[in-house]
Length: 449
Figure 1 (cartoon, rainbow, N blue to C red):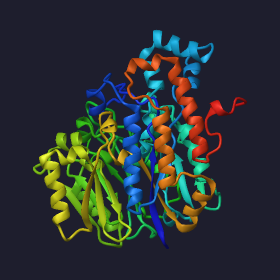
Figure 2 (figure 1 turned 135 degrees about the vertical axis):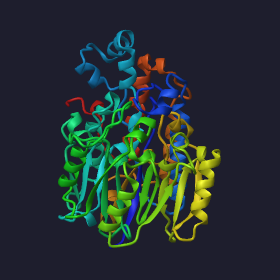
Figure 3 (figure 1 turned 120 degrees about the vertical axis):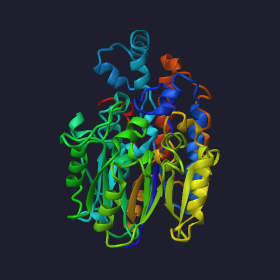
């Protein structure tokens, strides 16, 4: 069946700042409390989307969440009008206010896990928003994620939505950042690979320094909810040492597309067993492209986000790698990418570099910014009929002008205490839902809620 992998990228929100909130994320910690540029960040992300759309790759847009998260602050005891809430929180709990102003929903790889209809027993696309309990600033995202995805993928003939898993560490689910899929072609039935960092099973080792965010139990639950065909789910453990080195999600050290798996040898607890298990589960050959520690050491792989590149099928055949510009500036990363392209035994024939420095400084590369959904022609048309989130030149022009009109050039983490930032952000988001034809998806747009 004809199908495409559609990238849905998260638009960077107006409150983008370097709050240093993400435990285990080396880049976020290194740049904590530095000055950020929301406008530049949003334009960089939009430029990446436009680059792919211009290549003929189907590209979608996901709106930011409403920040500051006033409803969360109210639940935590702040009261009064919204200006008073912001000022009070800034005075007595500035770290909490920064968390409630985080623009982290931009990293859409954490938004949800999506299984295509070719993989599921009922022939529907299954969608489960991630519950993200490991980090407070992300744990408040699931309701907004669910509202957005339900609105975009709303045709019940094709799409099945599930509630996020119960919000606890037993069921800790970080979405597609720990999920890969291998297949001969996008429209064919594939193997869904769930990568976990920890489990209640005593024989599963844990990292010593940083928390393992994805649990095996959550991965197994998502696989059951999505009704993956028997024998087509595989569960693999991240290497605890990789998590301690800063690979907080699997997509920091591994990326897949169709029949290619690109990874660092330190990504998995046992890479040889991983390759054997995948080979046994697939009825088509797999191209394993492995970087050794000698080629690029673990700290450099994490620093450059080499494996957080996007691995993409091109409309005219073959594949390309969309890598962060930091890889071009790293001798080992650039050499490894050149080695891949020069190897005629794999389908990757091209590398493009993209400037996402605003996102990279907060710990997210090209693959972090996108949520992948494999859609058939009918499913893709259903998305187009119910929203305007698929990027084309007119939508790009509208979004670029919208960003330039509404976004601040500079923000320091302390600036989130300015109540006018809330008004600016909501004015922008209210306009955005009209541009994307999404209707009212934010609580502030529906006063009766």
